[in-house]
Image (tube, rainbow, N blue to C red; front, side):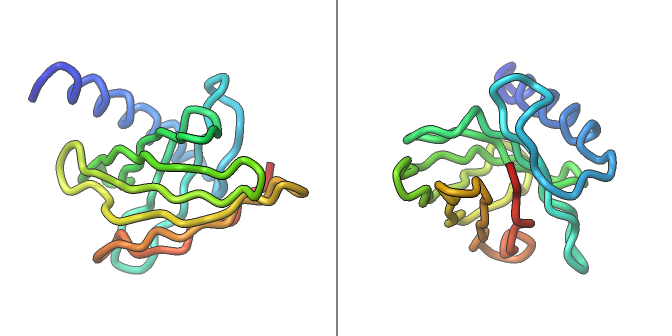
Length: 131
């Protein structure tokens, strides 16, 4: 495993452990300028955790399973006026979440709703997130 993958995986594992504190929605805070949270585990699957560097026209973040079976990088686009976004997940290590995330952040309330459309445990409606 190269140094970059090891650094990303170590950071993600630390964040995953910190996020298992019972919070069932994402929140802005913790690490300044980052957006993080998780969706509880659906039957037969691990929970889904994520962390994004702010919200911009080109969002970048990481998504991983709570059982540490894999981590993926998420990149995509966001229309800052309408709040609509689409992300593509690419596995970095292990069997990371796969597919695309489509969602919207309400320009009025800040509520974020999204769905991960992938295979197996990567097919899940994410918990609605309030600001």
